[in-house]
Each structure stands twice: as C-alpha cells, then as structure tokens.
Length: 492
Image (cartoon, rainbow, N blue to C red; front, side, top):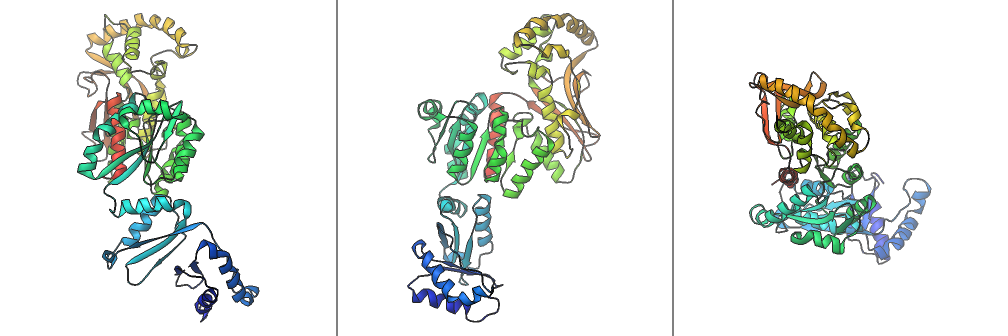
C-alpha cells in the first residue's frame, strides 16, 4: 500500500457501491494500514467486498487479507475550545491509559474540533465516565473506593469518609464513592455506592458470601473508572490480590503490611507494575500509623538526599509495655493490659516476637533504597524462644515466670535513670531490632504511651537527624493515614 496511488479510492468506491457507510477512517503517514469504521451489521460484507476488490494484491502478498474486529465502540469528543489548545489529545489518551482502556484506532481532523477513537464495547461506559471526569464535564472529580476490612481501622475510615464527604464535594470538587465493602464473611458491590451511615446493616442484609475470588472478580468485572482498592486487613490472601488489581489499573492503598514486607522481588514488582500502569500503590500506614514517615523518606530520596541511618521505636504495643512496667505492675501484667487496651494483637506473642517491628524496618529500608529481606534483620529479643511455642494459654501460664528477672533489671535501670526501648536500627545497610537501655539525654527517653519516634540521619541531616514523633497506633490515626493516601491519589 505504501506509495501506491488509488488504494483509498478503490476502498471507498467498493464500499459505496455496496451501500456501506464509513463513519471513521484512520491511516498513519506510513501508509502501511488503513482502519475503517463501519456498522457491526456491515462488517462481514465490508470484508467480503474489499477482499474481492484486492484479491490480486492479496494473492501476491502485497496486502494482507482484510479482517473485521467486532463489538467495538467509537467515542468522539467535540468542542470549539479544543482548537489550538496544546495537550488535549495527550490528556485524553493519558486518562484512558491510566484507567486501563486500550485505544484500538483514533482519528483527528485538521480543524482540531473532533477527536474520535475506538475501544472495546465493554469499555464504553468506563471511557465516557473518565472523559467526563477528566475534562471537567462532571460536577465532581470521582474516586470509586473498594474497602476491604471493616474492623477498627476500616470501620473508622468509612466513618471519616462519611463525615468528610460533603465538605470534600463542596470545597474540593471531589466525590468519594464507596462502591464496594467487604469483611471476612460478606461483600457487597454497587456502582451507585452505599449509605455509609448504615453500611454494617446493609452488608449483613444485602452482602453475598465473601472470598478472594469474589473480591477479585467483582472489582475487575465492574471495570469502573478511577478505582482504588483499600486494604484494611492483615490478610496475606487479600495482599495476594494486589498484583492482579494493579495490572487492571486499580490503585491500591494498604494498611496491610504483608505485601510491602514480603520477598523483595514481590515488593519491587508491585511498585514497578504501579509505575508502568500509571496507578498508585501506597502504604504510608504500614509504619507509624498516620505519621508521615514513608512519604518523608520518599521526598528526601527524590530530592537527591541519601538515608545513612534509621533509628526508631516502631511498636506502640512494646512502648506501652515498657512505659507501664513498674514496682507495682509486673512485666506479665503489662502484656495483659496492652491486650485489654487493644494496643497488642489478640495474641500478644506477635508483638513480643518483634516480627511486626522487623516488617516495618524492612519496609523503611526498602523505601530508603536498600535491598533487605526480613531474614537479614538481626533479632535481639527479650522473651525466650520457647515462650512462642505451644498455645496462647500455655504462654499466659508461663509468662509470670519472667517477672522476677524483669523487676531486678528494672530496679537497676531506675537507679541509673534509664528507660527500656525496643529499637529498630538500620546503619551501613545492616538492620537489627532489640531491647535497648536509653539515658535521659536520648531522644527516645521521654517517649510516652504507645507513641512512635523515628530519627533519620541523611547526607543533609547528618549532624542533627530529622525526627518524626507522634501516635504510632490506634484506629483513628491509622484510618486517617489511609485517608491521606486516598487523597493523594485524588491529587487535591
């Protein structure tokens, strides 16, 4: 076809002769191919007459046989204000791409008042929605949220969204539409969203049985625009869905730290897929609840700084325990108090094992540019290994046997005016966690309650490290951190 005069004449003459109307033509300057839009009902006839018209060229291998792609849809954006306005086409195709919509063919006239493009008919509704949203034809920018896990954190997040929804619409032009809610047993999905004032009742009344397969199929099957999956669980199964969701252009906000602290290759792959697909994988609340730790590290790295050392108290549970221990409150009782106050996991051995802190340190190290696995972290624990074996009841029976030793050590510590802190440390690429004694002049000494603190020593903040401190646990602040990640995806 390249450079051959009369090819297009023959195409349109043959089609016109057979009463076939053409509503879209797309041909690149290379002249290697011509795409023609006709009605679905005319597709087979169009192929037949064109294959007949070019039978000789097809036989000689000069032209490939003409084929029809069916069940497609054509969308046109039209407007006088498109003329001489740079970036319209870029904005259009960028928006479609970020939402996983593949453009099969496109055409634009020299008048610049019309851009037409062809997509799979299954993507038509989504295409119209993202165009309306992107070109401010809708009153609000919309984010469609799927929230998995409605315990203390997930429930608090939904309540925060419910209370802020009207304000965000009025002041920021942002509509947060919760289109999916799931817990371990039930799940419900609706394009129109739900009444967040009674979502628990509605989930019990209308929800279907929940499973990983149901979550995946419903979210991907809805094929809804500007979609965000929010994981407020601690489930490895739910974390395993992230890759598939990101590949289908669904952004992921995770309070669940399992994926980001899993094998380094899995962590790297998720980040890479998100970049390639133009979506977000955010997990600020994995460390420090709502404290801006991960974002701060990213800002430092992106601006050319280098993280040299990280020192942190990252377990609100363990900080609570070592702040409560006293002559009147033995070690075993502080653990029970942490459980009753819901600072610890239902099985407090998870906190005492240091596993949670190790995961957090691994995530920070990776975000700081270090390739680190959980197995690389040196552990200096304060509870003997055999206490982690057997049942939880066995643990509660055995743990009082540690009280006398802890009290003797505590008295020495008190006499020296020191405190215990469970410290996570990264220096020279080596990571460790363990119980440390800190004196009154140490930044960690006065850390109260279940607070977290982190010191970042960088090439720029070398003599005086950057310090971030505040609540490191609690449903409200963790939910707020997830809310902040959602807002960063909305970019308002």
